[in-house]
Length: 113
Image (cartoon, rainbow, N blue to C red):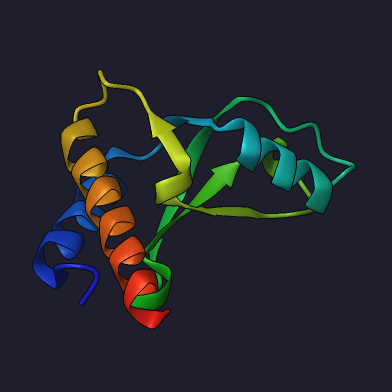
């Protein structure tokens, strides 16, 4: 099991009540989004405006506000690829989830090979 269901549910609920959350995009994510949507200017910072839990396979996914209300393409990124400000009220919970999920995914990949 990758995610602890109780902890994940609590984090999703806390994130939803804290929306919008400011986040930074890593250069890799910026590059990937720019390739997928060349008509959109991809900033290095944006707001998380939606939270989804995609189960064990997908984990927590964040809907990003890039391009404002007129954006033609919705942007969704795994929480593990986002960088949150340390001053965010729920930073520790987000960081703990990110570290735990990345660790479990690496362990799972190692077992699969």
